[in-house]
Length: 535
Image (tube, rainbow, N blue to C red):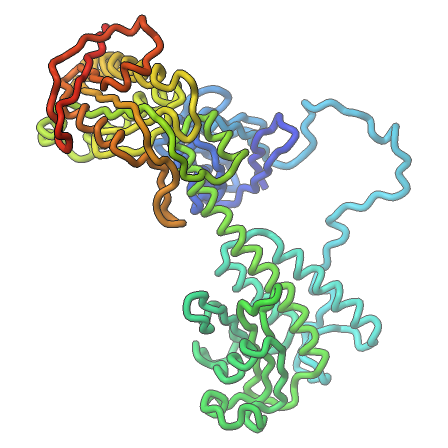
């Protein structure tokens, strides 16, 4: 089978197994290969695998897909091809084998090897340990071939080891539950089995996966809720030789209605808390389950519980990684790196320079455009404004507001020349719009102009919002005034406040004083200055 090796020249590589059919690459959790890199689009590329060939298709990504440094829309992959999605490099291999390009260190000449053992030799073929003919009941529903007690103990350990291996790979939780029940019915002769998981909100058991042996009538509610609730509450496994006559449950309507004879139910308990239960029963025979069966089912449930918890944690980590990547995308690379090192951002009182930029006449212009055209235009505009300019001057993007953007310098980390960086960024933004408009004219598109306002002062800066939806923001009158200054500015203008001018250290930046201006929310007029810039 083919593979994709991520970072093939690095010491730490990630190897992705490519399955038959579609394999997607991108930042979102629903991709086959989720790679948390800001240069990748949410759904960046797709590799289609058939028995004859492998085809890679770019999914309209922002930073494109390259094969052997050639930009592609679609391309057939050959063994050894280098694939680059954004800044992430992969190597396509038809089979995993030692890369001949790596130096041979002749380890055999330096080591005294007594014995070699490949991990493949430790794998267990369940078919070799289990009997296929289960028509003869032998006092247990375990399908073990051997009757010798010592050999059975060894075989049970082998089976549990193989189960743990098969459940160790990260899987979607629902698929994992199905796999657990498949293994259970392969190993034990039960009629029906179900996994119920605890709903974390109401603490009630909910049906998540069920399996029936061939020929057994299907019924989603075949289990006894009395039995499953008992196991959930007490956290212990139980065996009922004849549930209908068991004094603990003989008054339960679910036991009588389902005509349950023999049943077993064990908790899924990876640590101190029960996260669910595993239930199995038999419709036709009483006294069918033994102590050995209950002990084995409990051991299997322990392995299953650990796998389920790991799958849940893996999914949680993936979701948190997506949120963290989206959050970090509002900061330049240097700040993102520092955030990873220091962790959570605390709310701080600090001085910042706030930049507010808006497209002039956008409402009228957008009324003549299709919604898709507007989005495409804004995406191209914001890419230049933020990634090429704001981040280059180490500013923080606080938010997009329709066609406007709000950026700050001085939070989350301050630098001595924050105000200079903000004003220089504003000048480059005006020049960037001139270049972008020229390109649009050449492509027959509508050019644009922008107006910018800047203000400097105290704010409270930090994370705002719920745990699931957070946003970094600078709150205070300084931010509000920057928006008011922007609304005063005309097309192609940059207006700055008195406080911004006072903090400006680079005296090569020329300004001119304009008459005081009244703005909304202020009793006194503001003294503003026009930045004199040239393309």
